[in-house]
Image (cartoon, rainbow, N blue to C red; front, side, top):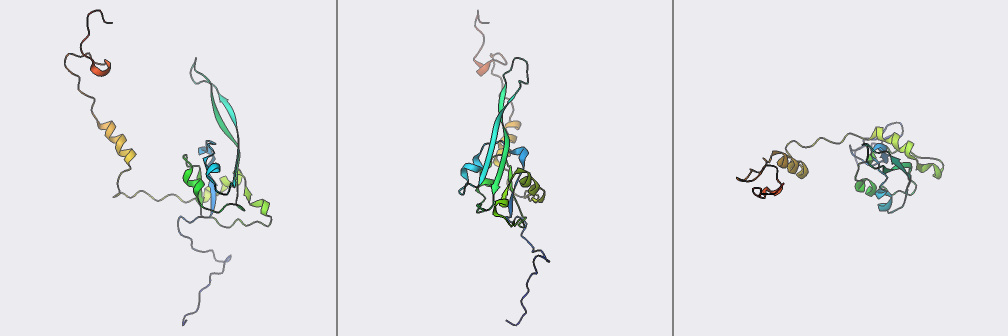
Length: 176
């Protein structure tokens, strides 16, 4: 009561935001496999995805052709979005990220549907994730991979043929 109140004069003075604050969702299109998990899990159904299948030729002679999904349209309607972050959490390929940008007001509500080109532009504003704590525990996946790489090959049992599956013992006569 004895001090004067301090008011930030927005938009002349931009506010200091926390480092990982939620603003708008950015799309890293190269990681999107069109699995549509984000659209299915969205409680507001504000994510629109269209795709088509493309045939990829065989990489080796005699191999078969593969098909893959190609992203045609990825749009988020921010007029419907409730910024819960479920889409970002369920994306298994890290294609969606929070950007701290919050200035994307529009005069027409239809302009709040951001297509993939505009969502890609938000990726430039996504902050770099914090570095891992050097004193922290190693992720269990990394530890398991390191343990498997350091494990020596099982010793060969006497009387078995090296390279024979399961070390099933010596060859019998007539066996090829």
